[in-house]
Image 1: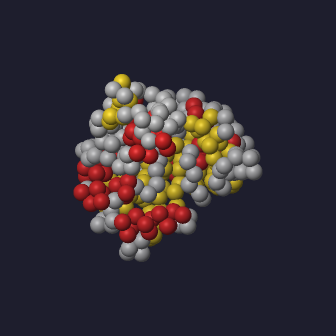
Image 2: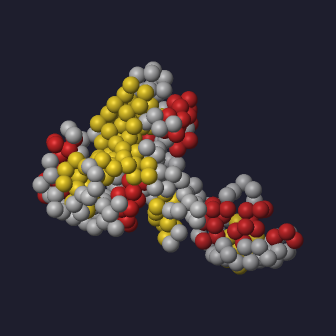
Length: 306
């Protein structure tokens, strides 16, 4: 270690000296026991180093470094051409590798399904659904289309509608526009919240919520995204007193047989960025949500036709 690294954390010192690798990767190597300082194994990234210390790194593959690999899996493809595909994601499938889910994601499946996906950032994924949210996603197959889809989403020209089952009988008007900024919860950085942007970081967020059916136990609603913030529908529904069924992160609880958040992306519509064709897709309600509706004596047929 040189004079510039004296007193620095081990992970920071290594990142400054070994430019080829990220600090995150080096942290994983340290914690895996692949780094020694002055011939002594060191497993704490936060340990302070001194000028003149000698470090040795044994390069090893980490879960993160191996995350972007093809894994064959069934993928429900609703539409496909040479430019893009639309998939119907089941609940329980993670979209993108992340801590705790470095494999078995939709991205891994896309890499195995199409060699062209290996040439694209995130295998062509341009938007995401939460692990326990089911429904429709569009995925690019070329870089040109990927960039175009990102622009369409940013311009709010991709229509994304969801069906949700929420706690408590509906209150207020049958159609309600929820406009409330969403950002990291200042009290719990692992979740999102409606925030005051004068005091906390956040982004404007807007969701149209329409009542479809109602009963004593809860309500069946259609949500249309006008922006696409992380956990937006879940946060907005909780903020108006109707947390989603089984969404325990935002105040919901298991009910009607559901153990995952009752949210399904049932409709996706946009203009094809290459052909100019107006495309519209619908995904049938998954069996677990359909059973929940029946348990609460709400009619999906009435809801979907509303």
